[in-house]
Figure 1 (cartoon, helix red, strand yellow):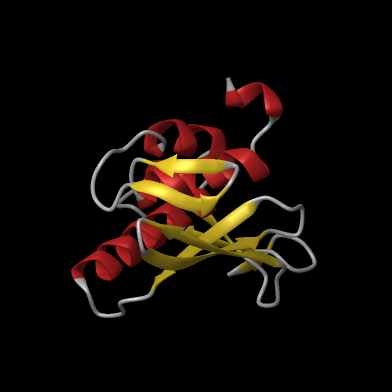
Figure 2 (figure 1 turned 135 degrees about the horizontal axis):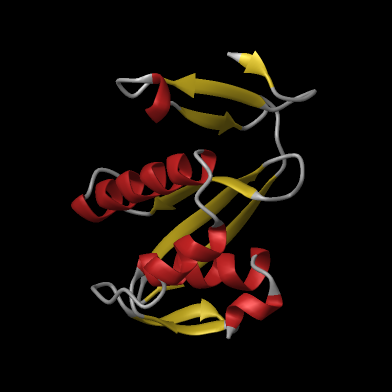
Length: 140
């Protein structure tokens, strides 16, 4: 790994040829984060967003109350893939556009007055990120 700055690491990953090499921008070992407790129709969870030094989200974790369940496992897989996509340069606005509005159980009323109803946990996470980290012009 080569140093990209005082705290951020850049990892070059080879994908078969030099033309397809990608750079992953890993978060600093010690980083700021935001943790948010939420509930969707009785399913309680915690959303933690690890931040790059400039305040951009670089990793996302969702801890659901029923560890070991299929729901918890699928949410962990989603957040791991989402985190890697952000670290490889996917703009947050693009990710939000793709995940916002996904509809599946559990869905319904939430504990968050800014997001009174969610179509799924994925929809909730995307909308939370949009409200707190996307530019105001991207929310339209």
